Image (cartoon, rainbow, N blue to C red):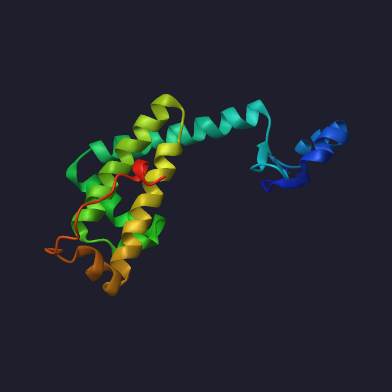
Length: 159
């Protein structure tokens, strides 16, 4: 079985369901392209549960590592640039905050079986790193704005 996804149009699943579903024997997932909506991924329940088990185990191991001796926190901070090269742009205190927040969010997400919050956290921290990577943007966003720009209109009133 290939680890890559096979891709077909959603209409192929509807019109030739047996042949299309047979492709799951050759691939771990099937990417279904839709014209009127977001693409879907089709996999077997067994494969989905296996992937969930692996992610859960990795999350628990990372959390256990992070809670151990102070040296393990240092190790976690040392490996973050390998996993997320953009952390090199973050100030040191932010790298530590990111590590703590990542582990805590992964544990919480694992407990409810929904990783959307982890994805959002990674995106937010990556955007923060992007800001720190651009000195002009960082200066513009961290500049002390003492000037009053006047009252802000209620957006519901401008509709």
